[in-house]
Length: 118
Image 1 (cartoon, rainbow, N blue to C red):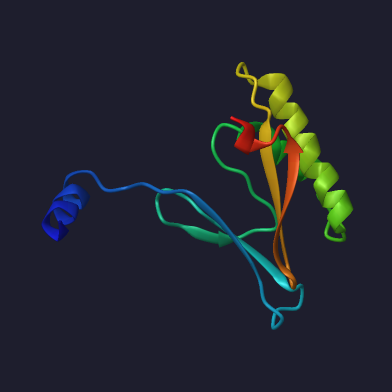
Image 2 (cartoon, one colour; image 1 turned 135 degrees about the vertical axis):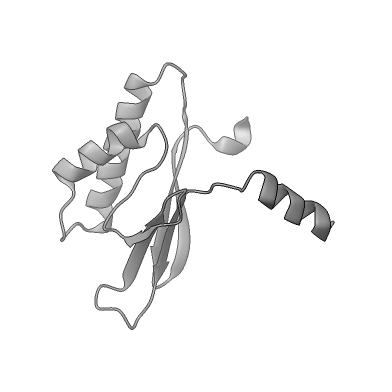
């Protein structure tokens, strides 16, 4: 098994994009967000989006994001991004999940249809 994985990595390395968020009491803002692209560069960010959706969402976040957003305003901003995607995508994507990371842990907020219904 290990030999097969090593062979696969040499033959065609995996490419991964990731947005990683967390909460730490030792940081001034409490929360941190990092974006890593498929080439391995990692950047601390204030907001992020990946894939085809980033073409629409990043422009909305550039315009409407503010340093002093509270949770309710941030959810409204994310909902604005989701509505833009629903309008512009050819596929009807109704399953979205918003996750909140804070000092209490990770909470899930739902938007649209429940993904477990599909």
